[in-house]
Image (cartoon, rainbow, N blue to C red; front, side, top):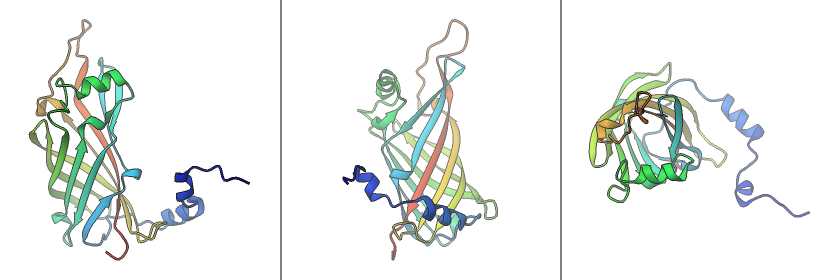
Length: 213
C-alpha cells in the first residue's frame, strides 16, 4: 500500500510514547546546561506579539524568520544571547495590515531589514523556580533601547529523539513602541487611538546542541 505521508511526517519519529516518557523526566529547575553555544531550533520556536487595535481588539502577530545563538557560561549570569529577526517576515494574518507594518510608517523594512537583540545581563536567577530576568539591547529602526524579559525554563533533555541535548524556555515582556520612534497612529472619534503604544511579546525557544560538542 502506498505511503501517503508527507516528507516532513516521514522525518518525524513517532513522538507519542517517546515524547511523553522524555517529558516525564524533565527537571523542574534551571538546567545545568553544558557550557558553550546552543542553536535555536526554529521549527519548534516562535516569536509572537500582541497589540490593541481600536482600543478593545487584540491583534496577534509573529515574525516567521529569526535566528539566535545562546552561549552558556559555567557561571549562568555570564551567559549570552543574540537574536536576529528579519523585519519583512512580520505576519498578522492580514496582507493589507502587514504591508502597512512593513512601510516607513512602522518598520520600514527596505531601509532596516533586521531587528536585533543582544543580552547584557542575566539577573534574578531563581534555580528552584526555574526563572530569571534577561536584560539586553533591542535595536529597531537603528535605535537601540534596553529591555528586560521574564524567562521561564521549561525543561532539559540529555537526548532528544535525534540524540541531541535539547532545552526549552519561554520569555515574555512588554514595551512601548514609541521608545523606537514607532509613533504612527490615528485618533478615534470615540476617543483613544487606532493602535496601542504597548506591545506584548511572547517567545517560545527550543535550543539544541549537537551531540558530542
